[in-house]
Image (tube, rainbow, N blue to C red; front, side):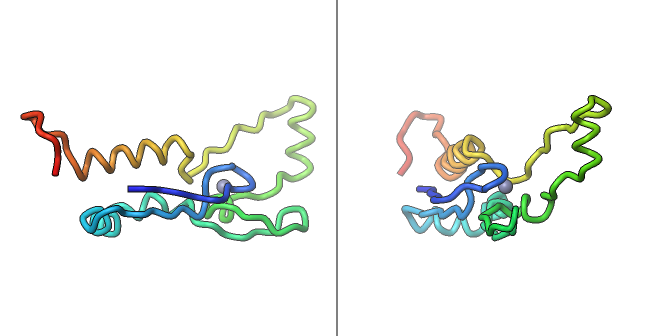
Length: 117
Ligand SMILES: [Zn+2]
């Protein structure tokens, strides 16, 4: 199974517009039956940010907003802290782990040590 992407989110820099290429019919059926949900948040959307149209993921499209003046002022004078935001879209390392998990799921290692078909 091959996974590729050509763009990154402008805000969180996670890969967007992901394309999965199955090498066999078994992988194709397994992918479309079980695994398209984890990649749902990495779909590409367009959003106006600072008067320019940017490519963002679905999570950033739905939840990102510019902090208001009072929040920035309070952060500058040390009155409050802005916690780092957690993103729901998958990072590059999570995607690689997901692909390796899919390979183990589709072709489980046999106990006798024989290679999978
Ligand atoms: Zn994003």
